Structures are given as structure tokens and as C-alpha cells.
Length: 245
Image (tube, rainbow, N blue to C red; front, top):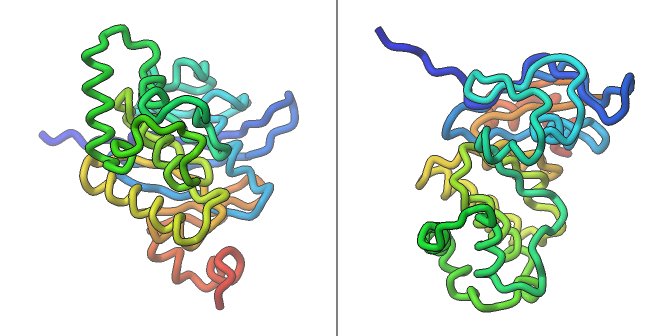
């Protein structure tokens, strides 16, 4: 008998916020399957970032459930999100340590690992995925371009072999041509290593084009969901969120 595998990540009717009695998102449900790229879009103030923070334990879930591979991780402690659930996050704001080298930044991605050989192994793995980082390994991270820093952040998030990466606005602050390169890197990692990604993205069109499925949030609630290709052609989504007719 074949046992059907459930989603890697699932939110079930999640209500969450930062103060008791003041939820930002209400009854939000979404799923991310293993090896899938899913994008959440919506206007500013829709609650997209709160969804991420609820998953990562940075916003308090007042009702509903967050499940990882069927295990309830609702209101997990942020420090346990990666260690016990295998969920890493690439934040919207730059998080590289600018005075440290690329190599040192990567090593910090495994700061709890005491086995030096294991750290070296993972650094070389990331260099294989991002040869540009290998070329800049001794360069101060703060002197690199915005796109290179974003790739460094993604590479650092891969150091501890996460099962899922949350990416908060991967295109934030990047020029259009650099944004294209970052999304292409995400797609390539998905193809080559089966990277599972849940992203929120203000650049709705490019976010959906890089994804398998998408969700639209408005006023803290789900309003549309489905295959990304279908959302890109939905007249209401195109008009309201993609700036297209």
C-alpha cells in the first residue's frame, strides 16, 4: 500500500499578530510541498511578513496550526526553527556581516557546529552552487554588489541543510537585472538540489514566474490561490496585483 506524503509545511486557519487581541492575519491557510517553490503576494500591509514570522515563531499564533511534515510547530521558539524543524530564513533586510569575508559569513551559518571538517565540507558545497562566492571568498562581504550579497545570504542559509527556506522579499533593493539573476539562482537550486522555498515578494509578476504555486493575501486573509501560471493569467489578479490588463 502506498502512503501518500503530506505537505512539508502547512498553515491551517492561522490567526497571528504581535499583541494579544490584535491579529494581523486571520484564518490563513497554505501548503508547501517538498521540492516546491511557492510565492505569497499581496499589497503592502496585507500581512505577508506576519505569515513568515508566525511560521518562524516571531509572531504569536492565537489560533490555528503551523505544521512541518505533519508535526505541530505552532509558536516554535525562533532558535529552534532551524535546529528542530529544518526551516531557515533569508530576511528582507541585508543580513551579511559587512566587515567579515564571504568565507567567514558562510562559516557563521554553522556557528553551532564544532566539527571543522564538516564546516569546510558545507562551505565547499555552497561554493559549488555559487562559484561567484568562491571567487570572492576573501573579499569583505560589504564591498560586494547587492545581488552578490543576496546570493551570500542564500548560500549561508544552506549551510545547515535546511528542509525549507523562507525568503522575505528576495528582490528588495535590487536593480531589475540583478533581480532576474537572483530568481534564476533560486530556480536553478530548485532544479538541481530540490530546494524547497516559500517566498513573499512585492514584485508579484517575477515572484510568480519563478514559482510553482502562489497565494494572494489581502487584509490579512487568503483571497486567491493556485498554480502560479494560472494566477498570472487570472484577470482579477492581473488587474489588482500585477499592474496588467
